[in-house]
Length: 198
Image (cartoon, helix red, strand yellow):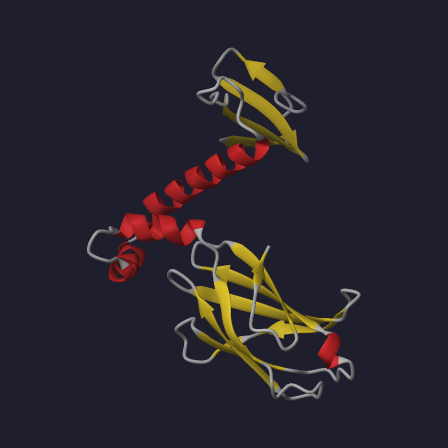
Protein backbone atom coordinates (compact mmCIF):
# COMPACT_ATOMS: atom_id res chain seq x y z
CA UNK A 1 0.00 0.00 0.00
CA UNK A 2 1.32 3.43 -0.94
CA UNK A 3 0.17 6.91 0.08
CA UNK A 4 0.23 10.17 -1.84
CA UNK A 5 -0.22 13.50 -0.04
CA UNK A 6 -0.76 16.82 -1.86
CA UNK A 7 0.22 15.31 -5.21
CA UNK A 8 -1.27 17.46 -7.99
CA UNK A 9 -1.50 14.54 -10.41
CA UNK A 10 -3.04 12.04 -7.95
CA UNK A 11 -5.15 14.40 -5.83
CA UNK A 12 -8.78 13.31 -5.66
CA UNK A 13 -8.15 10.12 -7.64
CA UNK A 14 -10.38 7.19 -6.79
CA UNK A 15 -11.36 4.01 -8.53
CA UNK A 16 -9.66 1.04 -10.14
CA UNK A 17 -6.97 0.79 -12.81
CA UNK A 18 -7.25 -2.50 -14.64
CA UNK A 19 -7.16 -5.50 -12.30
CA UNK A 20 -4.05 -4.38 -10.44
CA UNK A 21 -4.54 -1.11 -8.54
CA UNK A 22 -7.26 0.71 -6.65
CA UNK A 23 -7.17 4.35 -5.55
CA UNK A 24 -9.16 5.68 -2.60
CA UNK A 25 -9.25 8.88 -0.55
CA UNK A 26 -8.54 9.19 3.17
CA UNK A 27 -8.50 12.81 4.33
CA UNK A 28 -5.90 14.63 2.25
CA UNK A 29 -4.22 11.37 1.26
CA UNK A 30 -4.67 9.23 -1.82
CA UNK A 31 -4.21 5.56 -0.89
CA UNK A 32 -2.87 3.32 -3.65
CA UNK A 33 -3.31 -0.42 -3.07
CA UNK A 34 -3.59 -3.68 -4.91
CA UNK A 35 -7.08 -4.58 -6.00
CA UNK A 36 -8.66 -6.74 -3.32
CA UNK A 37 -8.88 -10.41 -4.16
CA UNK A 38 -12.24 -12.09 -4.00
CA UNK A 39 -13.06 -14.77 -1.50
CA UNK A 40 -13.47 -18.38 -2.68
CA UNK A 41 -17.23 -17.81 -2.87
CA UNK A 42 -16.62 -14.98 -5.37
CA UNK A 43 -17.73 -12.17 -3.08
CA UNK A 44 -15.39 -9.26 -2.34
CA UNK A 45 -13.78 -9.04 1.08
CA UNK A 46 -15.54 -6.81 3.61
CA UNK A 47 -13.99 -3.63 4.95
CA UNK A 48 -13.16 -5.40 8.25
CA UNK A 49 -11.53 -8.32 6.44
CA UNK A 50 -9.43 -5.92 4.37
CA UNK A 51 -8.41 -4.09 7.58
CA UNK A 52 -7.18 -7.38 9.06
CA UNK A 53 -5.23 -8.11 5.87
CA UNK A 54 -3.64 -4.64 6.09
CA UNK A 55 -2.73 -5.29 9.73
CA UNK A 56 -1.08 -8.59 8.77
CA UNK A 57 0.91 -6.77 6.10
CA UNK A 58 1.99 -4.06 8.55
CA UNK A 59 3.00 -6.70 11.11
CA UNK A 60 5.04 -8.50 8.46
CA UNK A 61 6.82 -5.29 7.43
CA UNK A 62 7.58 -4.47 11.08
CA UNK A 63 8.96 -7.97 11.70
CA UNK A 64 11.23 -7.73 8.65
CA UNK A 65 12.50 -4.34 9.79
CA UNK A 66 13.07 -5.62 13.34
CA UNK A 67 15.28 -8.53 12.35
CA UNK A 68 17.51 -6.16 10.37
CA UNK A 69 18.24 -4.34 13.65
CA UNK A 70 20.76 -6.48 15.57
CA UNK A 71 19.74 -5.18 19.02
CA UNK A 72 16.00 -5.54 18.43
CA UNK A 73 16.46 -8.91 16.78
CA UNK A 74 18.37 -10.16 19.84
CA UNK A 75 15.61 -8.93 22.16
CA UNK A 76 12.94 -10.71 20.15
CA UNK A 77 15.06 -13.86 19.88
CA UNK A 78 15.39 -13.91 23.68
CA UNK A 79 11.57 -14.01 23.91
CA UNK A 80 11.20 -16.83 21.38
CA UNK A 81 10.41 -20.40 22.39
CA UNK A 82 11.89 -23.49 20.73
CA UNK A 83 9.64 -23.31 17.68
CA UNK A 84 9.81 -19.55 17.12
CA UNK A 85 12.16 -17.17 15.38
CA UNK A 86 12.81 -13.51 16.20
CA UNK A 87 10.66 -12.71 13.15
CA UNK A 88 7.70 -14.68 14.59
CA UNK A 89 7.92 -12.89 17.93
CA UNK A 90 8.25 -9.45 16.32
CA UNK A 91 5.22 -10.19 14.13
CA UNK A 92 3.23 -11.26 17.19
CA UNK A 93 4.37 -8.16 19.10
CA UNK A 94 3.04 -5.87 16.38
CA UNK A 95 -0.22 -7.75 16.04
CA UNK A 96 -1.11 -8.14 19.75
CA UNK A 97 -1.82 -5.13 21.97
CA UNK A 98 -0.50 -4.88 25.53
CA UNK A 99 -2.84 -5.48 28.48
CA UNK A 100 -3.25 -3.91 31.92
CA UNK A 101 -3.11 -6.50 34.70
CA UNK A 102 -3.46 -6.38 38.49
CA UNK A 103 -4.60 -2.79 38.85
CA UNK A 104 -4.14 -1.86 42.49
CA UNK A 105 -6.09 1.27 43.41
CA UNK A 106 -7.34 0.31 46.89
CA UNK A 107 -5.25 3.11 48.41
CA UNK A 108 -6.68 5.77 46.10
CA UNK A 109 -9.29 7.88 47.90
CA UNK A 110 -9.21 10.94 45.67
CA UNK A 111 -6.35 12.74 47.41
CA UNK A 112 -3.19 14.23 45.92
CA UNK A 113 -0.03 12.12 46.16
CA UNK A 114 -1.66 8.68 46.23
CA UNK A 115 -0.29 5.82 44.14
CA UNK A 116 -2.13 3.71 41.62
CA UNK A 117 -0.04 0.71 40.56
CA UNK A 118 -0.52 -1.89 37.85
CA UNK A 119 1.26 -4.52 35.81
CA UNK A 120 1.49 -4.55 32.03
CA UNK A 121 1.62 -7.68 29.90
CA UNK A 122 3.20 -7.29 26.46
CA UNK A 123 5.16 -9.44 24.04
CA UNK A 124 8.31 -7.30 24.34
CA UNK A 125 7.90 -4.03 26.23
CA UNK A 126 5.63 -1.04 26.63
CA UNK A 127 7.76 2.10 26.45
CA UNK A 128 5.32 4.78 27.63
CA UNK A 129 2.00 4.99 29.46
CA UNK A 130 -0.19 8.04 29.97
CA UNK A 131 -2.92 7.71 32.57
CA UNK A 132 -6.03 9.89 32.54
CA UNK A 133 -8.50 9.85 35.42
CA UNK A 134 -11.91 10.75 33.98
CA UNK A 135 -15.35 11.25 35.48
CA UNK A 136 -18.56 9.55 34.34
CA UNK A 137 -19.14 12.26 31.71
CA UNK A 138 -15.68 11.57 30.23
CA UNK A 139 -14.20 14.85 31.51
CA UNK A 140 -10.50 14.50 32.32
CA UNK A 141 -9.84 15.20 36.01
CA UNK A 142 -6.09 14.73 35.69
CA UNK A 143 -3.55 13.26 33.33
CA UNK A 144 0.13 12.38 33.41
CA UNK A 145 2.84 9.87 32.63
CA UNK A 146 3.05 6.68 34.63
CA UNK A 147 6.49 5.59 35.88
CA UNK A 148 8.08 2.27 34.92
CA UNK A 149 9.26 1.24 38.41
CA UNK A 150 12.02 -1.18 37.37
CA UNK A 151 12.67 -0.08 33.78
CA UNK A 152 11.51 -3.42 32.38
CA UNK A 153 8.07 -2.32 31.19
CA UNK A 154 6.21 -4.60 33.62
CA UNK A 155 5.51 -2.84 36.92
CA UNK A 156 4.15 0.73 36.70
CA UNK A 157 2.87 3.39 39.06
CA UNK A 158 1.04 6.69 38.78
CA UNK A 159 0.95 9.32 41.55
CA UNK A 160 -2.17 11.49 41.67
CA UNK A 161 -1.89 15.28 41.37
CA UNK A 162 -5.49 16.55 41.64
CA UNK A 163 -8.12 16.11 44.35
CA UNK A 164 -11.05 14.00 43.21
CA UNK A 165 -13.95 13.85 45.72
CA UNK A 166 -16.00 11.58 43.41
CA UNK A 167 -13.16 9.09 42.93
CA UNK A 168 -15.44 6.04 43.27
CA UNK A 169 -17.30 6.94 40.05
CA UNK A 170 -14.19 7.60 37.98
CA UNK A 171 -12.47 5.59 35.29
CA UNK A 172 -8.83 5.22 34.30
CA UNK A 173 -7.93 5.65 30.63
CA UNK A 174 -4.49 4.24 29.88
CA UNK A 175 -2.73 5.11 26.62
CA UNK A 176 0.09 2.63 26.03
CA UNK A 177 2.84 2.86 23.43
CA UNK A 178 4.70 -0.39 22.78
CA UNK A 179 8.00 -1.21 21.08
CA UNK A 180 6.50 -1.33 17.54
CA UNK A 181 5.04 2.13 18.19
CA UNK A 182 1.42 0.97 18.31
CA UNK A 183 -0.95 2.96 20.53
CA UNK A 184 -3.43 1.02 22.65
CA UNK A 185 -6.13 2.57 24.83
CA UNK A 186 -7.32 0.58 27.85
CA UNK A 187 -10.20 1.73 30.05
CA UNK A 188 -10.73 0.41 33.59
CA UNK A 189 -13.37 1.49 36.11
CA UNK A 190 -12.33 2.39 39.64
CA UNK A 191 -12.11 -0.74 41.78
CA UNK A 192 -12.06 -3.15 38.84
CA UNK A 193 -9.26 -5.50 37.92
CA UNK A 194 -10.56 -5.97 34.40
CA UNK A 195 -9.53 -4.11 31.27
CA UNK A 196 -11.00 -3.49 27.84
CA UNK A 197 -8.75 -2.71 24.87
CA UNK A 198 -10.14 -0.34 22.26
